[in-house]
Length: 482
Image (tube, rainbow, N blue to C red):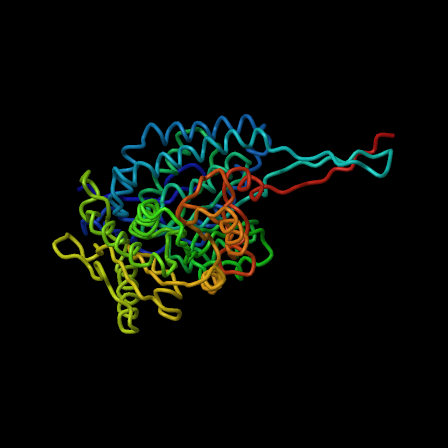
């Protein structure tokens, strides 16, 4: 296969990186090299920030409707190129083309369309004045230049959450994507260029996460930061960018509570998706399944059946429903969590190890672990792999307490036919979102998404108008009418 040579994008033009030597990137699915990635220097970061400010000033002079038209144009190009972009996602990430990569691009298209329409309706109040000679008006303005740091697990959709809102609201942007999925980032950036946005609207820099990420967080010309990543990374970023507006979507370790009156067929079907979609590599994947003791055996048996129906294989085969995990680091973490659970008395009922007979050692069998107890790594941390871990409870109060034991609080879920119980549990779970009769992995991108206060799951809200509001600042204007 052809290897892409990926350069950095600054001020509307691709240029060679001036940092370290270009880095190779290989496919987790095939093991073949897919890209050679240029690395940005500190001087290039400075130039990217300058270019972003120039673009911001031009974007800020536009009307919301003019920026909306540009945002729609990016969506048009994403849609026109969706097959090529989806194939590149599958190649460099490993997710199945038909089941996951194509839907990801479709979701990104919708995010740009939603931002384009939402910015036209980003209303602000006229506030009653205590002074009869004054009128109090509020407006929203772009913050200026955003630094964006995005992960590999949805290399087109997650960046699009920020990029669509950033363009629609008039911010210049400096973007450092994951080093594991640079081709997807370059595809997105090319859509911006070809859409005719002002030069410098989006500047794409590749480089070492610690060095380039630190540079973006601390750069005096970058006034706000958006990040989707782990809790640990988010805490580092928050310290480095102290004093700047932060939009942080962080770790999950999400719990699902299944009560005895739940529809078991529905539970098993949805848990199968929540645990194994994207090989379990989603911030809101189902990580902890808490099941009423009265239906424990039935739920576990259903999960084993669901796992056995999944098909590991090449992301380009239509029959494939589960691809590899992204890296050796990710696979090793799953190894460690499963081994720790077994050592502490849990039982692996399906899977539990890497699969043989594939091009790389990153294909992990869908795994069901029963008898999970508090303190096991698989319970205390995000596994971020294709694992369903099950534990039991005997009362509503204990179930909620167990779910809330985690230091993270992104999404929770509850399965029950009892409306009163559903509301009590939803109100009691210390998560930023709760899904009733669906898994934690369910989310509509135009709705607010983020962590619970006091937990390690982030700051602010992504989704629809909430992202638009986060990426703008409110200004009050007091007008004297005498």
